[in-house]
Image 1 (cartoon, rainbow, N blue to C red):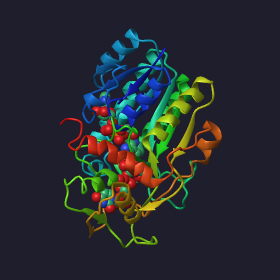
Image 2 (image 1 turned 90 degrees about the horizontal axis):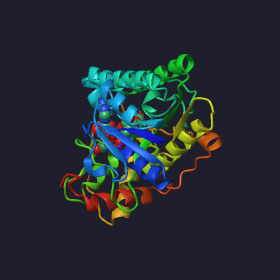
Image 3 (image 1 turned 45 degrees about the vertical axis):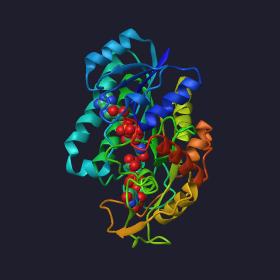
Length: 329
Ligand SMILES: NC(=O)c1ccc[n+]([C@@H]2O[C@H](COP(=O)([O-])OP(=O)(O)OC[C@H]3O[C@@H](n4cnc5c(N)ncnc54)[C@H](O)[C@@H]3O)[C@@H](O)[C@H]2O)c1
Ligand SMILES: O=c1ccn([C@@H]2O[C@H](COP(=O)(O)OP(=O)(O)O[C@H]3O[C@H](CO)[C@H](O)[C@H](O)[C@H]3O)[C@@H](O)[C@H]2O)c(=O)[nH]1
């Protein structure tokens, strides 16, 4: 039996595939390569280039392979873009989930592990955030992910498809050897943008606002290493395999780092000084997002291995030094 990884050529998906194959799982990938990279596809995975909104390709995959469970990463995930093109997000994320679930019902696949996000919470009323805290997304991206969670909830009741939704906080880092890592275009995430300065691809990093109600005035985020995240997906899949009920888990390290602390940590990790400018706030940024991952620790037995922020940044640095222009060059 194989695992179908939707979006396995992307940043998080490629690391999850790597860990699945390390654990001797058979992996099938479907990815339309809209943001994914051929070079990130594990050579031992069977790859179908296609779109999850295409029921015909899903039929073909389910008929040609014995699929035990699905891990679903395929989505659009830029908060800013979702504010200006919300329908693109509803189409790819929500309609994509609909076609995938319909196909799962048709082919009697009853397990799915889903990439959700801290963006489902919106502006948190308290930190650390717990899974049953209020969900009130402040952007269409978060709204689509919450809708996708609700679709799984109702399909679970009606059709018996069991799910685990993993609400990630800020994903960071790369495989230790730097063979795969984060390559988004445009890049919007803080760590790869900071690292573009010592790579001489960017003059300085702009801090988006230093007037937040935090100790140094910059936003606090909870950074979780992509390999710890991959491990959580495998645990979630095995949790479903053991017949346990559908569930939702936060995934983070439980500690917030400010933008200024991240820049200082990157200077230490790279041994280079990083030029900084302070700019205006970015619309929609909550002052702090910090996870309580207690539930994942208790129920999935998950424990992050990468808790040192410099070490997390170092793994990203190894990837970027090896691939200064991303995968394609
Ligand atoms: N990176 C983060 O910080 C973060 C945080 C929280 C949640 N997430 C979620 O994790 C998932 C993966 O994020 P990522 O950073 O790896 O993104 P990514 O863009 O690198 O990966 C997504 C992959 O899915 C593919 N894809 C998208 N739409 C598709 C479709 N319709 N059919 C087939 N393939 C399709 C893309 O080509 C890409 O390979 C996303 O669902 C995202 O919302 C990411
Ligand atoms: O050039 C930059 C880029 C980012 N930041 C700041 O750095 C922090 C982290 O920003 P990222 O863009 O790296 O990450 P976000 O916290 O905005 O977003 C992440 O968490 C979200 C959940 O809220 C979504 O899941 C999203 O996909 C995921 O990348 C924010 O305070 C942001 O304002 C800067 O100061 N300068």
